[in-house]
Image (cartoon, rainbow, N blue to C red; front, top):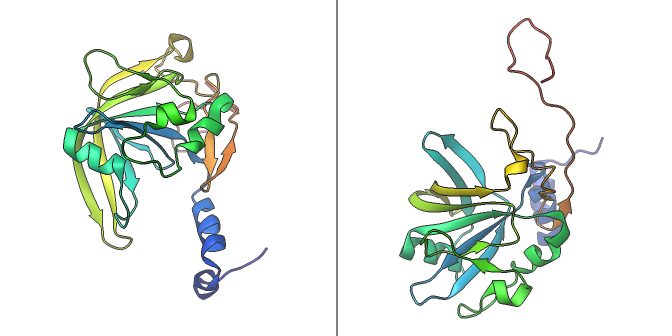
Length: 210
């Protein structure tokens, strides 16, 4: 097994170090975050850092990189206090990845990459029509992570939309059935497949399948 010390990791070329360290957290979620600025310009950007925070109330969080360049997603959320989170699926990962390109503020990533913006229930932020699991979120809070100069954004889910056939009786959403994609590192997209579901784990008992 290969070993790299902290010093050796630090000494790697920038791109190699970035790809390596971004792979270490394992397979991550692939989501498109949709926003709109105060002038009506739509924005769509891919994120691999969205995770759930709690279920009552339903909240999630994601990480924003340092503001050394324009961050349209961050600025739009702070201005309008709303955003959408949309799962990425296997058959259009190429379109989702293209949203990471640095488009101008007045350019809609929806139009540029070939995805469709949709608006539901009088919310003013765009969802991705092609996504089978998507939600509208309100901005709750942000926390500055000084060690990396990042911002952790907290959102509350105001509305959730998903295909009914994905949900099992206990509430579980079978994202493998939706062909939701995952991400390794910054640009490696993966398929997901179901292995097993287990009952609630208890001490001194063998795991039992659902």
